Length: 111
Image (tube, rainbow, N blue to C red; front, top):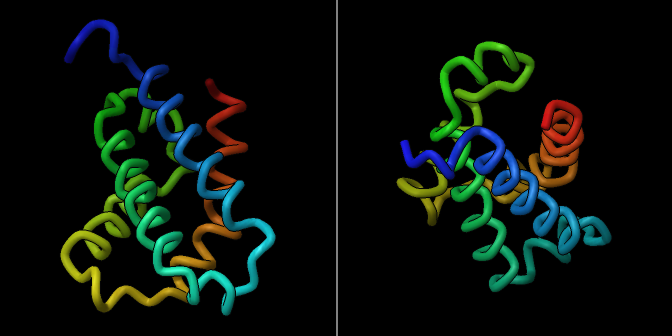
């Protein structure tokens, strides 16, 4: 692993991507979200980026912070990447509205 890219680096990437998604979706209803194809693409990309950054966190960090369901983050990435056309937008919306803010808040507290 590149010395400059440690857990703090990847945490910052996760938090930045989460902030972007939350900021662009927090005032949207499920119907408004589902109607905006460009936003959906952007959100999906950011969720994949969150997962990619999470996968680069050390095992030690993940073990110490096992309140986060790291497998679920990776599972969502796999669904987006491999089943893009069949991703349930209601699950994405719920993830963005409920899970992502909690993840961001938690990671800010341990950063």
